[in-house]
Amino acid sequence: MELFGEITPDRALLVVALREEGEHLHQLGLPVLVTGAGKVRAAAATARTLAEDRPSEVINLGTAGALKDGLEGIHVIGRAVQHDFDGEAIFALTGENFGAPLELGDGPALATGDRFVADPQLRERLAKLADLADMEGYAVAAVAQAVGVPVRLVKIVSDDGSEQAARNWSDSMAACAEQLAGWAARETAA
Image (tube, rainbow, N blue to C red; front, side):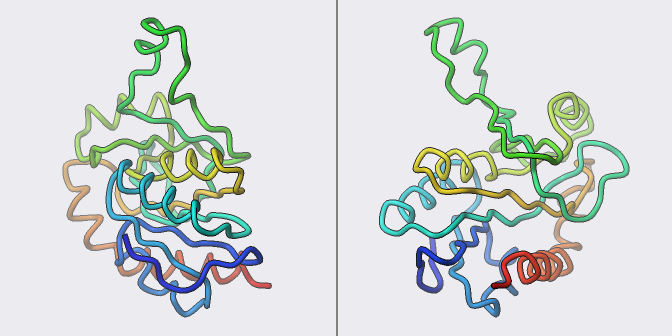
């Protein structure tokens, strides 16, 4: 976890998983939190940061794999689910609903899990739940909502979840980071 800049109540906190994703965000003058990859790191870093300071909102920016053909560009997520958490089984055992989908507004659905999607069968299964897949969005949103801070998940399509996903992600990272910074500059301008 690394926090760059100072969090204040009148400015957004930008949250990314990897330094590469936030490479151009520092020029915006907003605080940037780099959590590390995966749901646990994202949740822990976001919770630790929000326990100390409250921004006007949390904006999780990052890359995502397209689970459906034809998806590209930047998307503000409307719904987030966990694809690697069996909420139905836990509900059947306990009668409690843990890990319910998070409703965030209008936009495509995001499936978050601790597995990088690079398998056609997994992609096909997840496409029944969501439009995009990442590894941190749900965790960041869940923490922000739990402490009452507004949150937006903003994802750019970096790959298609196929066997070539890792290579495509690596090849597209620089352009994705630049486009995310452009979006953040437009959407957070005072």
